[in-house]
Length: 452
Ligand SMILES: Nc1ncnc2c1ncn2[C@@H]1O[C@H](COP(=O)(O)OP(=O)(O)OP(=O)(O)O)[C@@H](O)[C@H]1O
Ligand SMILES: [Mg+2]
Image 1 (spheres, rainbow, N blue to C red):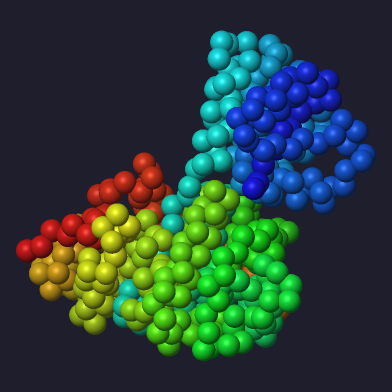
Image 2: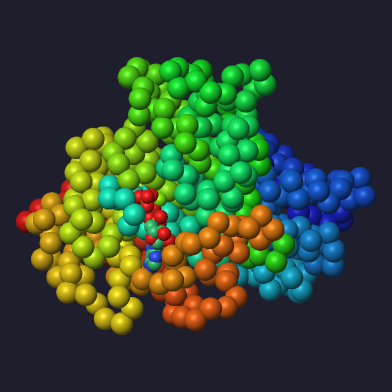
């Protein structure tokens, strides 16, 4: 279980203990640095911050003067951790606390019920479950991997929040966007990869055989989640944007589920996967799946875990067919209470003018062919065809992974327009998130499509 980190000045010990006691009574784990900071290393403080689901800041005169508190706030901000300021005296706000926290300062210890309100706010931060999006189309080559990496990498860079990308395609192209094959395969060889979301592996216990080694058996043994850092690869680093962009790397061996015939074992493995995603939802602001282009067991797992599907499509009839099949699979094979909403994104459109196909699709001409109200599911932003999105080279080991994202490229013709297009799609994704992915203008429930 992760904890609430309490940032405080040493002078505020009484309030610290009061807050700690209130959290303990409410069953919420907390952690706070010792009064003598010399007894704790910077690496431990970083780790405690990374593992926190929120940072409570005791806002006081001494806290405003304390370098340690400033460093706590800076660490939390650069890791994208939720900050909960709690005002405990009348000192005038100044410095970093004023610039970073004044806008969020709603809790004041001098007001009745403030401590209960702080506990409530902390509990809400713990139970917050982030949206899960699956980038999917049952047609291959339409830009799923490109959208998963470039659009959601842009969203991360623009918001400074915490994004987890999960490579659920046995081709593991998403992993190869960021790492060379040797590195990706070396991670899979240690089970520090997507298979550990489905089956008990060497990541969960030593002496366990790798589930990747044997294609004929499935391990149905339950397992507890490992520490986030042991599972994911951190794609951001020095010089990169604030927040977190992590990857659960992919591997070919998850193809084994397509060959399995033991329905009970597959059902247990799907439950493991759903439980792991539930667990990860409190540690990120957004989880994104890159998926395989055909309907398999993995497709079902992704659709049951996701709140929304973003389906990239080219402006052509083959892609349209892929979207139709996708909607049909959602409609017919996913239980109603787990059905994700569906949004469709045009990818690889002409830069200058809208094609007739796109215009017709927006005007409802293809709703019947799609089998649902495609025109209502189309996102208004679109991604143009551009050399910036056409992957030609493998990543170089010395280049930081985040540099593979177009939003962080430094130069190139047409880059400005491409970045604007990515930002427009990312902003529309944000709009879809508002109100916990409530159906917005650009989404229709796949389970209740309006048919023509
Ligand atoms: N808007 C774009 N402009 C130019 N090239 C693009 C664009 N979008 C994707 N591409 C290129 O098209 C190819 C296919 O894209 P991508 O791999 O993202 O598709 P996919 O749907 O993930 O494929 P698969 O079904 O095999 O997983 C890649 O080489 C990619 O770089
Ligand atoms: Mg792909």
